[in-house]
Length: 251
Image 1 (cartoon, rainbow, N blue to C red):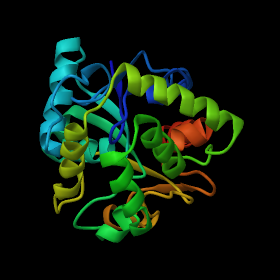
Image 2 (tube, one colour):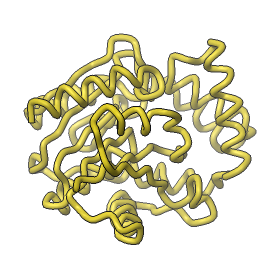
Image 3 (spheres, one colour):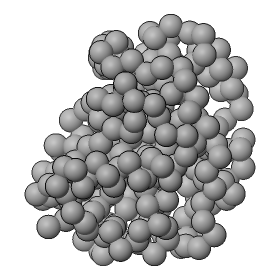
Image 4 (cartoon, rainbow, N blue to C red):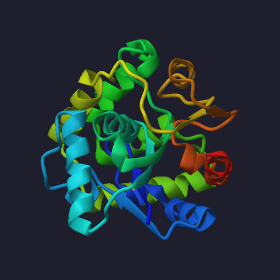
């Protein structure tokens, strides 16, 4: 029995998936689907975040064993979570059946100015290190989704602020996660696991060229949403699910 595993990105937790996990599970007919938090986020907000991507990967595998979920796994992962999924592909490919990577970026294949758009540096530094909880969540929504400014976006922001109040992430853990993402370098070899890349053309955080470059390097399929941002499952869950379902049908 294959278990689906969903991994979120920097400073995010399982609740940020919203209704997406249930929708995906129904669409692909998965008997088991698991959403997991990295240390420092969500249910694990009281723990110290790992300062390396391999350590995050080891923690995810440990969580799965503790929950009684054995491989093989199908993984869908976003941003930093996608880096962890790729490290998993390279370290333990026998455990993975297939992997979907959403809006990720990797050294040494992607330059730093594509991995994080320079125009965002001042706001990110100012808000992440000195801004209020509400200011931080508002900035994240603005940079990751085209829902910002809409009635739905206002409701999402209120929900995210509630999540952050209930499970606050420390500035130390934010820095540890940033450090893990920035220092990680992907292996030279092409992953020995079937890959699908998905990206948002209007991603304001990571340049879509990152996904294009990776697809060319690995000779794997890439589908680009013309109007979605960094948080593709938030902006258009139905599109993501349709791409995954079509790809699985060809594997």
